[in-house]
Structures are given as structure tokens and as C-alpha cells.
Image (cartoon, rainbow, N blue to C red):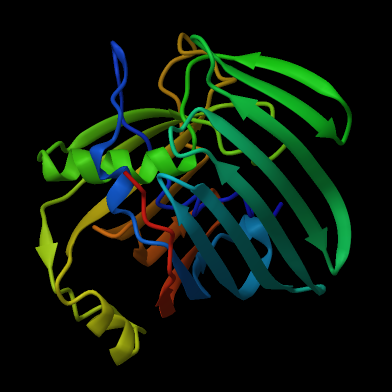
Amino acid sequence: MIKTKTALSLSLLALMTTTGFVEAAAIDKLRAHRAVYDLAMVESSDRSGITGMNGRIVYEMKGSVCEGFAVRFRFLTNVQTSRKGFTTDQRSTTYESGDGLDFNFVTQSYLNGQLEQEVRGTADRSGPSVNVKLSKPEKLDVKLDKGIFMTQHIAAIIDAAKSNETILSATVFDGSDKGDELVDTTAIVGKTKRSVSDLKGEPKEVVEAFEREESWPVSVSYFSTAESANAGERLPVYQVSFLLQESGVSRDLMMRYDDYSLRGSLKKVEFLPSKPCTP
């Protein structure tokens, strides 16, 4: 099975503590942008049957802490096996309020151009839980445990990196898959880097866009919350590594699944205008 779960929900991480969510100071420093990544397969197991894979990710984040954050994400892959080839196409559109309390989402999964699944819903963090209302594929109300949404994730890990935190635990809701589950994450954050210019596959204009920014190498493991914590050591569903820029842009992606791994090179980045906050 080819997994195209929103891995760029990517640099979308969160910092949680035993006393609850720490509001991220970096949320108002994130820059609206559009980023395009070319994907190439690094390796695959014999069990997967995959002989080749490539694709593209397009990630666009608009808005500000005053307007809220609108994110559009597309993850397209071309897969070759010894028997046939096929394409997968995952698309998502989300909106998150600037205070991180409300979240709207639509996710669509296509196989060879045909829509296979569509999930639509809203979620809110009123009270001690994440409350989800689904309208597709069927109407359903779900009450989940405590968690946070996507844009707060990015800002929180940047705050943690600036405070020299190296290990972060997070519980995340991003509306992916069936839209009715949280995801546990464990993130490892490396030391601060400046003006990184030696990343394979990046054009000169991309490197120059980050000349004055701090960045941090990050590796995140994602775990299903459905697995019992008492069932022994949990294994991650997938792992993502990347270089996280202070502006919230991710570079040098590496996505590792059970049977294959993909590398994503940032080929284009465009910073977009956003409405300034008024006093």
C-alpha cells in the first residue's frame, strides 16, 4: 500500500507539556509562502514491489495570526511496479484561526485521477478536548483527547528550537486519513544552522531566499494514538526529517515509511503578502 498521508503536514509539529499547550510566540513570525518540492525515491524493500517512484509536493500557506491561516497542500506521486504503474494524488485545504482554537478541513485522495475518498469537517479546541464534526463521507461527531492544530505546530517547534529544546512530544490533529484521529509525535531537534547552502538539488534562488535566517534539522516520528501505550514499545507509522527555517519553510525533506523512502528537494519558494495586524 502506498502511503501518502500528509507528511508535510510535514513540518507541522507541536510542543505539548504535561501541564498543557504552551502558546507559541513564533506564530506571528511565520511568513506566508508557496513552496514546490520535487520527490525522488531513495530506497524500497522487495516486499513493496516498487521499482520506481517520483512526484511533487506543493505547499501554500496564506494569512497571519490576525486573519487566520489557510493552507493548501498537494502530494502527487508516480509509482512503478514490476506489473504496472499508477498515480496517487492527495489534496487538502485547511483553515486555522489565529488563536489555534478552530480548524476547518477538506482532504481528497485520488488514484489514477479517480476520486477514492473525500473527508470534510470542522474541529475546535473548546474545553479539554478536540471536538470534530464530519460532514463527509458521513455525518459524525467525534470527541478526541487534548491536541493542537497545524500552524501552531510549526510555531511551537521554532520556539522550542530557539530555547535549545532537543526532544519534543506532541499530539496533533490535522484532518488527514479519515479525519477522526489524533497522532502522537516525537521530535528530535538539532543545533541551530545559518545560511545553509549545500543542500542537494536546490537552485541558487532558493538558497539565497534564506541567507539571513536561522534553521534547525528536525526528525519526527509519527505514532497512531489507537495503539495501546501498554502494548510495549510502539513503532512509528512513518518518519519525516527536514531542515526547518525560522520563517516556517521546510527544506531537504526525507520521508521514511515501512517499505520505501522519498526525498524532497525544494525547487521553488515564493513569499506571499499577508494583511498586517491592526492595533
